[in-house]
Image 1 (tube, rainbow, N blue to C red):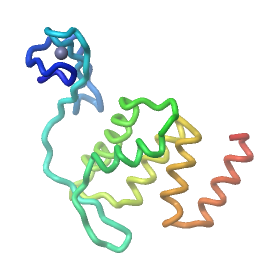
Image 2 (cartoon, protein in one colour; image 1 turned 45 degrees about the vertical axis):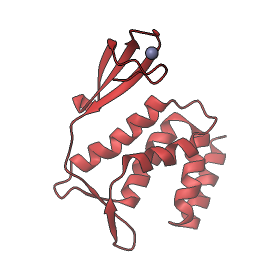
Image 3 (cartoon, protein in one colour; image 1 turned 120 degrees about the horizontal axis):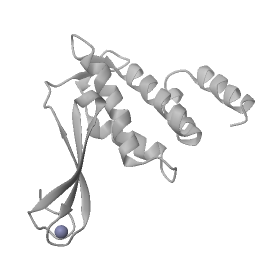
Length: 152
Ligand SMILES: [Zn+2]
């Protein structure tokens, strides 16, 4: 790996951890030139998956798009990049449980909302507001009422 700080191509692995039931390995590396540390992820290359939109159109599943949505929802919140990677892993685990490698956009939204709800209420509400605006405004309104009753 090329060091993102100085460009040197030799490093040593200082920590290695399996994620998502062993489907992914996260490694902490230390550059042998500048000594700074960075993280790499290694995962099994899988056949592509499709996302089924509400109108029935399909598009290729895109992990970067999932992470991008999470980064926006979690802006200035105490949610780490590793947490967001773990949430995307949950979506991919759901895809892997399917025989046809298709997942609905609704299902992806539900998984991410469930994950965010457990980690950060503000990020959850932001994500849900964007997601549910197109889904069911009444449902979103009820969700906000429910959160308010819990003092969120
Ligand atoms: Zn370096």
